[in-house]
Image (tube, rainbow, N blue to C red; front, side, top):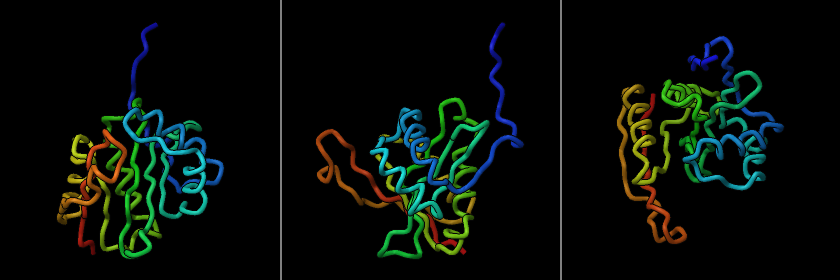
Length: 169
């Protein structure tokens, strides 16, 4: 019997802030994307607990299919920083990344922020386009400037310029 790929129905997709028990699933999701840099499982447990208010997960049928991991930089409390945004390959190409970022921006912890920032590697065209689409949808600018030079990373890691979206109303 052939397998038919169908788009996820909105009824079964739940967007919510993570719970402490989501840390391992977040870690697994990041690995499953095939494009994100996986950090330690402990790191994702921290985000699912201490930083849950500034993170968002998409759950479908008991599985995390997408997430935005973010926080407010201590020196820039009016800024919401997107550390990682990822979507499972089975759910890519359906606009879920942009939907996640839009809902993430509207979370109570982020709604008052005047800026959204992220660093995006020079070779990551998909994320570059995603943040430009977000800025366009918010009716504001997306300014790109040097931030983390390649010299700050181990050999072979690309530079990560800063994408700064805003000011937001």
